[in-house]
Image 1: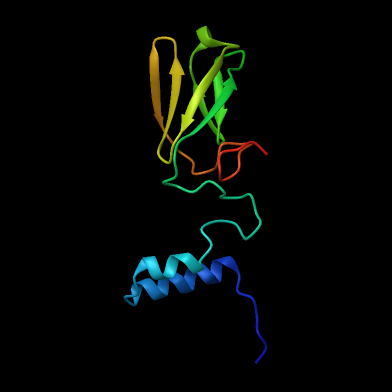
Image 2 (image 1 turned 180 degrees about the vertical axis):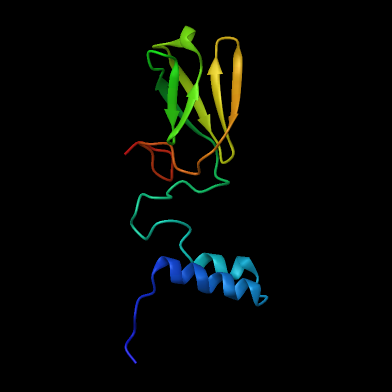
Length: 120
C-alpha cells in the first residue's frame, strides 16, 4: 500500500476519534495542525498566547478594523490613531477617557503580525 499524506481535515477527524476513544488531548494535540497547514500564515496566532498590541487609525466615521472585526468608536474619534490590545477573547482599545473592551467575534490574527508578535 502506498503512503498517502493526510489532509488537515482528515488529521483533525482522526484526532477527534482518538480523543473520543479516551486518549488524552495533550497526547493527541501536538501532532495535529491547529489551523491552516505547515508554513501557512493562516492561524499563526494561537489562542491563549500573550496579548498583542497594534495601532489603528480610525476611519472618517470612527471605525477601526482589527483581525477582520469592525469596531465603531464614534464620529468624534474620526482620524485618530488608537492602540488596541488583542487577546484571545477581547479587544481592549485605549481611549482618552479610559480603556474600552470589546469581545472578539473572530479568532484571526491581527494583520501584519506573525505568531511572535513581530511585524513581517
